Amino acid sequence: MTTTNGVASLRLISDEIDGFDLSPSDTEEVHVLAVDDSFVDRKVIERLLTISSCKVTAVDSGRRALQFLGLDEEQSVNGFDGLKVDLIITDYCMPGMTGYELLKKIKDSSALREIPVVIMSSENILARIDRCLEDGAEDFIVKPVKLSDVKRIKDYLTRDVNLGNEGRGINKRKARESCDLSSSPPSVITSSSSPSSPSSPFRSPSILSSSAPCSPPSTLDSPTSRLKMTISD
Amino acid sequence: MGYVDDQFSQLHKLQDESSPDFVVEVASLFFDDAEKLINSMARALEQPCVDFKQVDSHVHQLKGSSSSIGALRVKNVCIAFRSFCDAQNREGCMRCLQQVSHEYTMLKSKLQTLFRMEQQILAAGGSVPLE
Image (cartoon, rainbow over all chains, first blue to last red; front, top):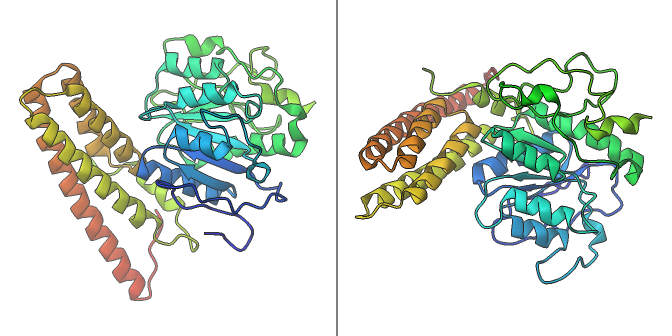
């Protein structure tokens, strides 16, 4: 289904990938590839993204995601220019290929590694979050995903897209800040969309599953802070 | 304890003129998903040699989708259910299966009533507050 304002929002894809109707010239809207094996979660994430003015392609497995990205197991990328994906958001626990495995495959691909990958999980496991972030994930969202999570991701992503690719690739890795290693449940470091955001922009309550956010030291200054903030220079 | 938590009202925020039946659609997907999963759990627990990992996998999925729709009570039973799977406690699992099935049935009935009432209000020309 395609809406009149040019946003192509694709139906849930379970058996086939038929969403090749994206306009290659439409560079303003963020195109997100959502990967989740759960029908319910796919529907929700698709809606969250659409309502946040993103184009969405939703697939039900890592394998289909790689097919969509043009990166099959047997072959290298076959150059689908019209399917430029600005962000991949994937569930962690999926049969076949986990979200983490998908992340690794994307980051190992020279053609795809610049695409930011966000991992979602219903389980708030520090070791898991750390591993994903260390291996190149942009962010880690604890489910259920809320509108505020999507808005936050879109904000920093939109800025990246507007700046082109120069902003990417500069130190995506981040170690967790020391306050996150405390006994409180893990939180995820994310940068706010603008330096002038209000205090605690970095700890969205939706990410912390059960505790209040630890008060963040200024992540703008920390060398381990998430990269996007340096783009503002 | 309420049947649904804040996530349910979060879903209502996603409903608008361009997707006026969003909540009902998600709920329907959830009902289908839950029924399949509960049946799978029952079948797995009936086996002479129970594959607890398999049961746990179904419970994990149900926990995920119930969390996404805001089905608090169902989700909470799933949490307990997973502990029994870890402990490979068949009786505990059977009890949880009964409980989860009960909670699911109650939730489905309440949501269907809610949706019916909302339809009636809308058909009568009224409007339904989102929260």
